[in-house]
Image 1 (cartoon, each protein chain N blue to C red):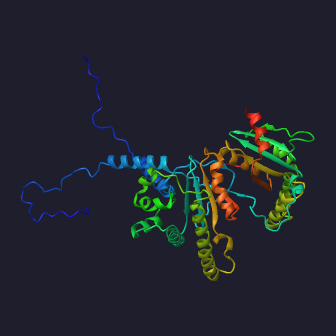
Image 2 (cartoon, helix red, strand yellow):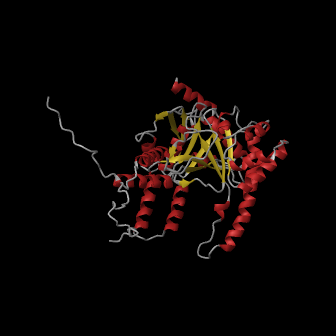
Length: 208
Length: 223
């Protein structure tokens, strides 16, 4: 039909010249092998989750014209003391001598530990946040006002303030885990500060 | 003995769909994968619910490895060039052109200024095995502080000019944010390292009155 047969008028009884009828199939095995090899390589080496950052503001070393008001911080505050894979806390001011002595309570990084504790203590902020979220969903306020109000709530007197102190044995992982819990509990004021000597003594007693 | 009759010829199976799929997946993974940059040190980062992206363009990063060694990295070729010029000027280190260009290409560096020429002459694998104590950050010889200070200065200057340039060209409904051009201070800490090791780096930042730090973490779902 659509083939050009070049007989050249040589149809003189001799055997007809025909193109060799070979298979047009190419052996694809090596290519497929390579394909799967690459597939395996990429599956095993690729990482999809890009690292994220968690920001944390440290207290300034030289306070800028803000009068130091210790009463404000101590009011409604909780202090976490972190050591290797363990975490302790006490509420309010540190009181080693006069009055009722400060006692450390142990907590943990599990869902029943710090998270539950903070959800109770920071009820004010969590409740307010829920109210604001409701308003946002009913479109009573816009997104920018929601964010503004939330920051106000977090700075309110009734919200919980947290001090984080680490001893020399604490690992970075422990510290980050704790700060992470604080973010989960919507704590607005987080202050990573230095450990006092008396607090170290208390930790040493507990971890003996 | 009766012979079992074997089917003659090769059993043929159409593999085309499978191969198609395999190559489709290869293509997908090739395009989706992001390769790890060749860092001189590997750290396992802790996880958190933090959801901000790592600011790749305006990054000043200090890495703390398990032994507490400190590594410095900052982004932007022009910034890196200026920072290195200031550093070799301050510490009177001589670098040839090849070593200088090498610094612009690599990511983190972690060595004393006196070791820098030797460090930059190595290749990626060599830098990984380089015996060093990292960048010194003690009170008598605080090189990390200089790295950060110069990088901060340079990045602010560079960011400012870039901001002015971009804000002129930006469309009116999409103004550029000045904050995107400011340097961001990032700490990449090994989860198993002691916190006091990271604190050494944190104190350097705080000494320079740079208090807003970001910890690199892997993403985790919010409970």
